[in-house]
Length: 268
Image (cartoon, rainbow, N blue to C red; front, side):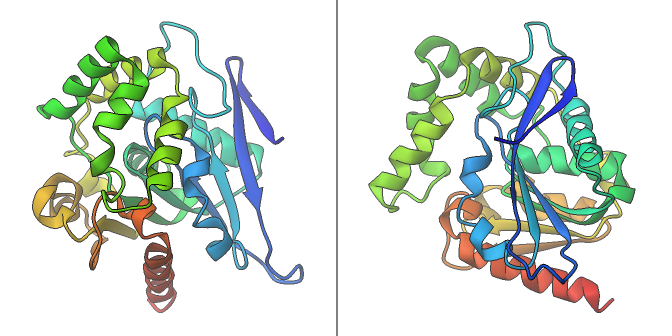
């Protein structure tokens, strides 16, 4: 299994898929999952992309099969961004397309701010940019603390996966998130509740695609029009007829939209 030792406390697990014609140059996509998740959540995207692109899916520090940091670790968007940078350096990748979902998208925004020279494009899926003053994260912290990870995941599942989705999808998704350390979730929810990228977004020049479900436009302005209004080169696309976190409920439509976005960039 591929692991990259990125510092004294982190062995990062990643998946590396490429099925492009060997004689053709393939650009690289790096995919960053959200909080309490892992690289498996991108499973449906990979076969749709890896025929033309090298697709790297990482397990972020503390999640999936990557190392759990010691108690007292300084969780921050910037430190997660640095982990991505070190992975790119480890893999000798100069520039990539970065795709992040939920908090992984927030981390990707931070990366685009700190390391724009390493990106061809940026895509964020159902991602918030402002956590301060939002009760959701502190409410989740209380629920995880009092009832545990699995209970928190079950009680908040319907806004992640379309409620009408296959029950097996719901259960698998719950199982994946429930594997995460309770301490890691409590610590990350605590630091996230203090994050606000309002002043950062106007400084991100990387061409960006903001993907959301159709029902998110009205229900989650901080993940939709609010983020686009602050970024100089961002495009919002709400996938018609979708709900929940669109990257999981409609992966095929998301990949089609991403390909169209990359095609537009190539004609600039």
